[in-house]
Image (tube, rainbow, N blue to C red; front, side):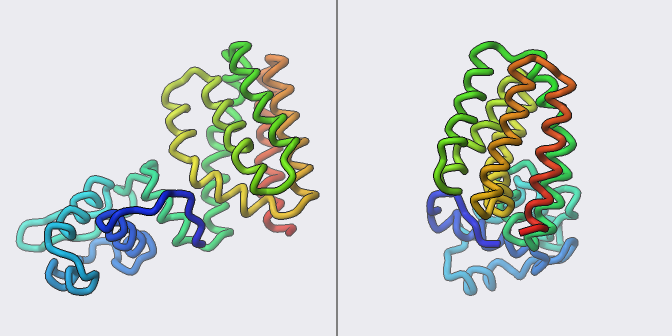
Length: 232
């Protein structure tokens, strides 16, 4: 799944991406030692300082560890920092679309309905206006490309309206993965129109400050959005 929403990276960033994707995809398996530094430098055509910096960055993201008399090895998946935007991006590229969506929607179902419920309780008038404007821009979109940005902004506005810094952070971290899931599940005009209607129900529930309705409409939105991919 080669969808990328990030600006081009420098050479060091490109090496980090290539190595990171190899690890996430299982090319280098958990517990396995990486090839020696000289071999990696020769394969990628880079200097030792660049390769060392790349492995240092991947270690900070929880993917690699240096062990005495062993070398650099791939850490177990449960150590990977999946909230890191790069790691999450590699996961979206490595998995088949349906597997990525299953993982993504399971995660979203775990916190988005609760976030909408909290937003209905804590949102200020300004917060609700941000949500309304995002929905209005969704309704005025003439294509998926135009829909994408306000759709992401809608969900982020709800996260912000919770006034919970952890939830806000999760929302921003999932920006790239959310964009990919929207592209995969909103692939024709009819689904786009239905998506706008579903989002309106969530907005109306929060605007009316009805926590239960906010939770239920968000659960329905996520359920129907995941189903859209299977029915396309």
